[in-house]
Image (cartoon, rainbow, N blue to C red; front, side):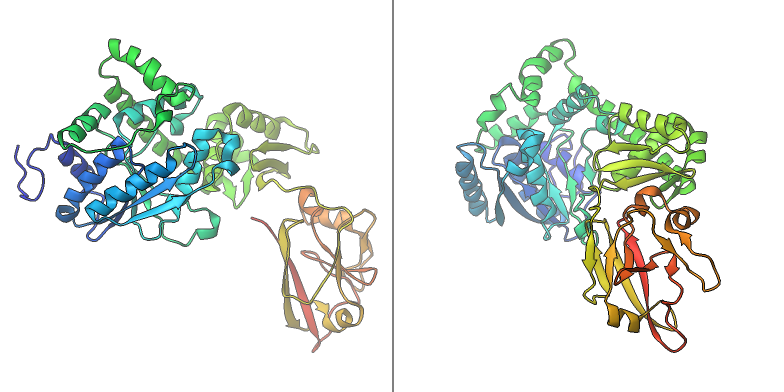
Length: 461
């Protein structure tokens, strides 16, 4: 079947046509594509194909090479990529990375993390194009299943996905990860390379079967292929089914969050009504929204068990990686893990309107207001300092009211225990004069016409 556009490949069965068909619905005029070029067979073939499609599909095209400095040949591969791009007059960005900070995750995972950090910083890109293919997809699905992944992990690699830059760059545009060769087999790609007399480099680590992926590639999949020659397409199709199921589960979690969640709180009654499976799905989704890895199913199950069955006065605290589940007054809280606060904390205020207190996991804010808040004049006379609760503190908030224990006041304000232990208390000299969220001690308020400080405490979200 011939293609009506003369500038495109004339066979829809060709490698170029399949890649073009994957790209065309996703691109827009002038889109900026940056190819992750390793110098290996797959990325060199994709480089060659993208060169031919840039004009017909109307996109701009450059490359990025990440040197992990793991192999003794790493610099040679970088030089090869530089020669290939120079010969073809294609811009290339070379990046050196250090995988040492991520070595605890394993060498392969560390290299991947460092590489994707480089991809996330490509501000000149609308799409980061990677050369993963059908065999890679089959390997990824099997690896995920063997590692006990759930539906989302079993979805393996999507054709396109948004890239997470992290909290610091939330407002920055993100280059999507794009994999236009997922429908092509390694055999098909190699045949194209040989037919076009392309040159590439071989990564010697690809033959090392101590790595899980290589063990599957060289030892397991050839045996599977003898009985199931079409396993690549079958596994890719299964990954597609799991991707659809994952999307439905995400939509369900989003609907459940609208009903049960209030910021970082979840109503325990709603969690009970939705049942264990849906509650776990919701917690996984919330963790992923916060950029956290989903914990193991058993860990989530144990968290729900404690949330639902522990005594009302029990201090429920379940670690979920960098987050933890806590419970108080009919609510479950999903919170960042913070170190224990320094019991002997004492800080002197330097007059800054915004006072970050990372050791307490929040920020104190001062707003000047006439006739309200803590009298500025008293602060100028005596200074202002912060301390934490030690027990036994008392406070009188109204001139005609009684002096009451701070413990009871905080309980009545329904402040969770873990927030009470981090709540900064405001002192002038050795007198407790204000507690953010409760108010100012009687006799220390700004009078009518006097300047005062409204003091608020903002815990980390």
